[in-house]
Length: 177
Figure 1 (cartoon, rainbow, N blue to C red):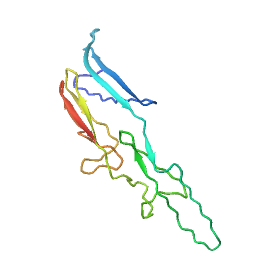
Figure 2: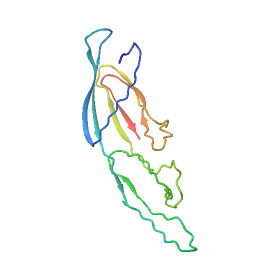
Figure 3: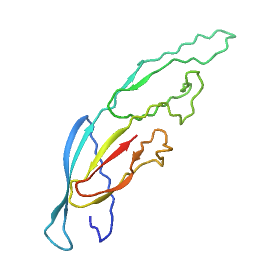
Figure 4: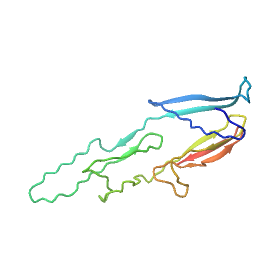
């Protein structure tokens, strides 16, 4: 990539692993000014990622409904409780999708709206962002949501601060909730 004076380019660093594992790597940036053939290292960032398999504990692995209708019987909805617990060390997002005739309901057996937030506990994680380079750099957290600390969106992570600048050797803690 080439950057003209004062130009900024934002890139996204993406990691993926099909198996749970710890990965350590270095991101190296080398730059050459103008048409110089020789490049010098301008930035070195230590990358580490712990890929964790999602783990969900369910109160039951099978729920069975059985109705024996007799002539003249009026059918009423049946409900059975199901408890889901995130047992992995990171927040877990999921979609529960049910086909008719099943639906999700609250403890009073009232149907839940399709966009209902089912959990009232939010786990907060702190991520240190550290500059190991010799030059300051700005950072921007790319987020799919438009929530704020005062008005977060349900099931959308909120990162605070979402923008800033790090000088050489400085560290900023990002809070993800």
